[in-house]
Image 1 (tube, rainbow, N blue to C red):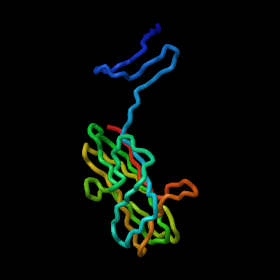
Image 2 (tube, rainbow, N blue to C red):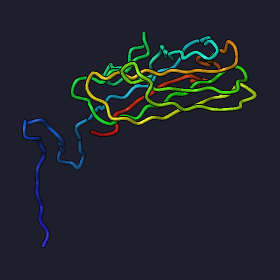
Image 3 (cartoon, rainbow, N blue to C red):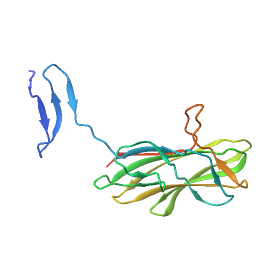
Image 4 (cartoon, helix red, strand yellow):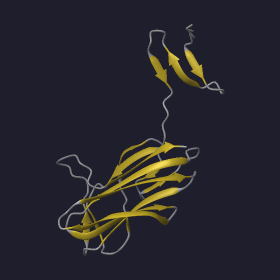
Length: 173
């Protein structure tokens, strides 16, 4: 025995529309914007040898909740958006280096580190991190290298590529 339920709108307990139909089979669902952002470094940036330097990506591709600050390179968890997050950090060195390290800082403390060893030419290093965060927690991205004064490669106009960038997205509660 089959049953049919006919409705044109589903609502939550507070009367907010979750899903509607126009009667012709076209369905509209509630758009859920988790905090998500992506930002890149717009110009080459020098970093000293054996020093942790904050990566301040100064141009946003997008920022759904205005939670990434391009002036200080900090993502802050907005009110009501606590949960599990995934962050990505990519840097491109312009010259050879023996090692480069990346670090994700949470509330001013280094929490995750990753890196690359033994690059004889300019190359890219990427790190991904997932972590549970509370409202008001903030995330910053750092880089360290061992080859004299080194430049991080900024935005490359000729190919529309992002050589140094950071991104983050809420992936669950």
